[in-house]
Image (cartoon, rainbow, N blue to C red; front, side):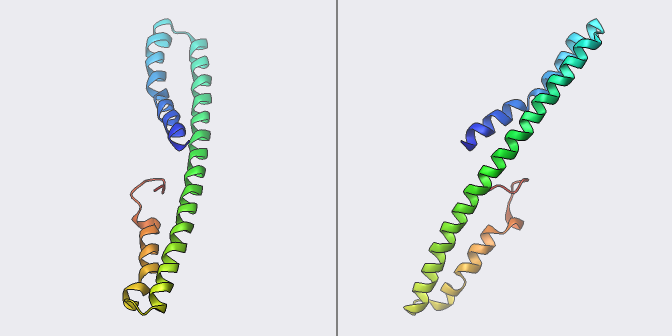
Length: 116
């Protein structure tokens, strides 16, 4: 589902270059103000659709990330608890939750919008 949103957002990113191509081809050649206004309205609508799709994609990715984090938190917590109760490597087990938090910290994310 996220891939579908990403595909359409990326296709809509071509709006700017196609707009400029049409302005140079149709508007400047014929000096038609009506064509320019129609293109502006169309491009505005397409950019609004792109913004909505990008917002929805971000929300879906946020939910997927939260579900993944909840699963990882449970697994790491149970592993740390099991390791400390069985006295297996208590020093390394104690850092498991801190290590997971360090990986999930937004400071280490390379993506500009914070999606992992």
